[in-house]
Length: 555
Image (cartoon, rainbow, N blue to C red):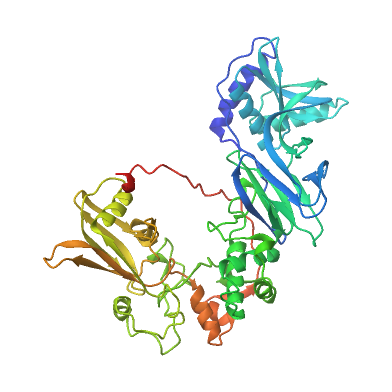
């Protein structure tokens, strides 16, 4: 939808250009650009997962012989053999035979203007195309089409709809077009070179006993390729929610390492709640969630395991709510002994994401101060996950290494790091909430869970690696003369710390607790119920990959 200002500007451009017909066209400035428009589909129990994103081409197929058909019309495109994949690309100008009526809005000398107008027309739901007129050296842009024979009344109504959308003026005119025009289309190509084009998304549907392929990975449900807001393609798995969870739960809580049924059920409910609460998160790209840690890791049917599947089936449809609303079901690996209030690591103050001791009643440490002491000199064994490898950890930096990582955080050389000060801590969980780095080049600070990226440890390969958590204490290292030689950090836990600790859930399950008890411990005051989510018209978060202006490894 165009804003009133852009609509007025477009009216002026179109009035001038369309009035010229194919004679001496006015050269307009570029029309408003528009990406694909994806009407929000009501949620009916199926979720759409972007398994391949930001691609120029996507391969799809199936484990059985299949047809590729156009979404909506179900028109046949091509067929494939079992385990054969076809390649889907996007072409902004596919020559298409035509014999119908089309509404010409402009004849422009700008290819950019042409493409933007066609994109805007398609985004508004009007089939749009273009053709080059050599005698006038311009491109006719058609926005909208009608079948023959001519129906003047219907054409008048249609034209007014295009005008109301800000895509034409009264100077636009209907023409009978019998020569090929160029349309932006999906092109589906077999390895033999055989291809077919379609306006709507190519998709593959197979029997429930078979699997579709997207990028060579097997999935239940439907394989589809769709063009997103940025103009790139996505491979989308359209699949029932519960079958989606079959491929999520084993990737988020490994069933071989952690086969405890109640912990697996708790993970299933948390994963279902997250998915239900984030339907439509990336809808401008045509899908709900992505298959990575940006949302939840989804491995498709190859990731499925009988233990995880049983946990999903045992909790079918159940989600966690607070005051009737789906919660933000945050989870992470291990707490270090105490979970965090959400505001200590993220923005927000959700009343159900409160700090709790990750231990049985009577086994807690006496205070947060005692927890911080235990980081340096571990002795406490009463927690639900004190057995986990990241319950306690420590890392050491030389002066050069700390200069490197802080310089990388500050994006400049910083010289020596002369002090690291924890300026504030959570009074409920002990996690650092603000850290200050004092350097030769000045003072730099970071807050919340971003602290972990500001002071990564150096792994055994010499690579800076995300600090496991913000639950830590800092120690200055000195030589016999008292000179500063480096730093050591003693910490506990792995992950942001808000919500359910997955290894704590395992510990609770081992202690005989049910999945309901597990969830109600980590999410304060919640209710477990069967409730469906509502799909929203979301805009996919933009994740940029920028060149770091300072890299200490090459400085």
